[in-house]
Length: 249
Image (cartoon, rainbow, N blue to C red; front, side, top):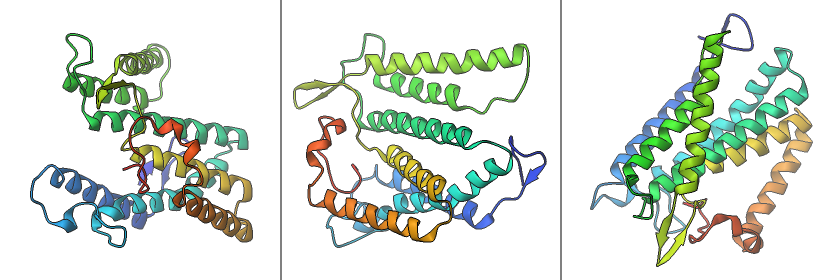
């Protein structure tokens, strides 16, 4: 049971979704640790050919599945708490933006920093400060008034200022060229876009099955078109790194 900021009293959890989310996180941690080792078996890393799949390739799809399962429950709970459609849209857009920002930050953190950072700022320190800014911004501060409310505002504002500073000073050297932040290892960003699309479809069509199936068919067509290179000329926002078909991995 978990207290909700929207509805007074305990809110029941759907155990199966929580268990699936937890197991996926465990697989993610295991895969991240194993990937740093050498001479690991093929089933412990991403598939090397398009007609095969390992447990590593299942992690992101399961994350997306859990997001989709949770969307109707979360939005219906907000509507039951009395939030207007505009307030729900504001929440969806803010959360999407947060996921995109976190995705870009974590992706560039994984790439490793070059010596282009200012003197005194090592790559390791940049990473620690990046994670600290995430905590300051997206931490769930206790509800309060007076000085406690002001303290929460100061901490969150400090996190935003720190994140902006880290983004401004970031430089990456790739093949003799200097680049700024780019969308690479964009896992959290992918989840953010999927969250936005799923929420948009649900808010627009609710439980109209025919409309939802039509949206699914449209998304499948978009995927096929992307596989055939139909949208390659519009992917300039990915940055200087090579675009791969398996989710910018």
